[in-house]
Length: 195
Length: 161
Image (cartoon, rainbow over all chains, first blue to last red; front, side, top):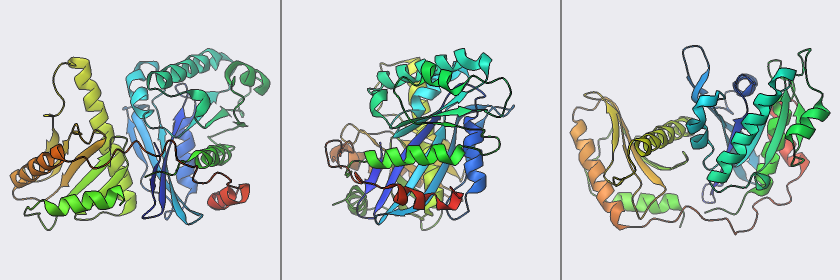
């Protein structure tokens, strides 16, 4: 749930990067961290396994400046992608304001993408959310690799809501900020008056 | 009155000998937003990280407890992670304030028992008083309903897009 503090003129929003394991969720926020100046960001927190896979979540707080006099803060979270961390993914989805689904474009990853997206829908439903009412953006990641599914097929198989989508190569930074900017806009447009 | 001011007003009513240094008391929404702080104040970026981590710890602990047994009441739970002088203590939300977690982050304390005593006082106080239902705003007007591309562009101008 977004937290609007009218007294201090601040809005705080939670954006979650969701998607299959090794799809590039952590790479996205690492790139955001790298390209954001110290004034705009806090510490990036990574709760990882020994082999650098996300165990619980990654977290990056961003302060993007003011909009109509309100200081805007975005809290970026990633979920762990590995199948057996379902319980952790459910926790991180609590009070989500916006979602970026990072799909792995490689041909052989289509089933993993579908499974992850089905898990997302189920987890949201269990917590009383309707995926069609939450700001959602798709990112077709790893477009730099040779064996990728055409974007039209990804749209057809995954994006049944007609949500905005972006091609990306997060490892090179392509599409990373475009995706974040779009979901941020949708989240801000969706913000209620608050406390 | 904002939730922040309401909380601070209640804090000021609770008489206790708060250590001057090395203790920060936080009220955090169950989802990790820091609602207010008192004691040794921390900067906003540090607070955001603390809120996310402390709420994550609390949520994971609750899920773990549910996994083990759903029968016991949650209200007498507490969670602490500390050595003889530093650490943190978390109190669960109360029935009247179901979405506020109180956290006590401390370091270099000669008497951490005093912090537990303070925690007990705060829990007793907020057991009796409903601060505010945080689940508000759902039917209110949109805050920025006619936001423009230019306004969003300005927020992301640092990224060169």
